Image: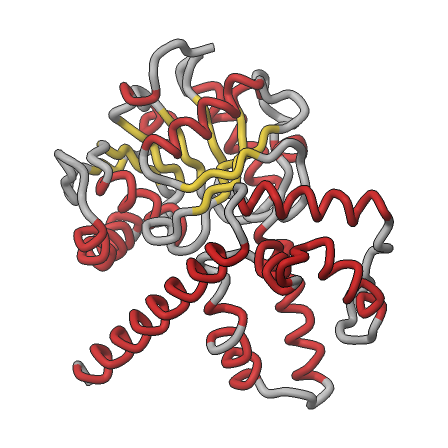
Length: 321
């Protein structure tokens, strides 16, 4: 167990230089860290450079940390050499379970005894990936969203043999460098956000396959509809507001029967009293004690800001054509 504060981590190893791995490297560099990288592809150096250079203007606009340097990255011939001396390891190899198992075992053996090794996997539980590691106690999932240098969310969860301190340290490190972290209590294939976006994706494919909607209509139904609310209030708090002054309790009691309506191909869970109470309590936590009028005003300000920002970005893009 490491007692060193995460603020003392100055060097990160990025294992894998694909879209996710290179995006992580760009973000770490923008936070003033030094990066040691490895990727078996012969053109890895070129791929890394292209992604970092493409990401740097956006990172600059968001604000660079002191000492940020897009060239503070070194590519090593082996994964073990890249890990040597790193204070944190981010693995971003392809989604191949056998590859993940062997690579994570190698990284765990090469990393220092107090160094956490995090996997960017988009779906595999760490329990399944850590089977070959002699010491899996420092192996955790640190699941980002593409592109990692722009999207703040990271889902953190350990496996059955992950030490609690390792999960907590990974979460603390990500928060320290500016990420929004969900530290999950238990493993779940696909984690939280991927399962939610996959539900929308499956329903979209059903509609296209049945000739019920076009891809353009589906995209616009989100970008010009509920997607405008989600940057400030997620699905649960959105439905809390849909209940008016009665909040989530009124929404569930009033609209609960519609859960069984054939609006989607996904089977809805039974709205038991326990599930209803959990949703009501969760909405109250998300609301943080703020009155409904304040939440509505916050949502409205944010939606206006998001619409203006998107319109400005589109206008700027059109001007460059």
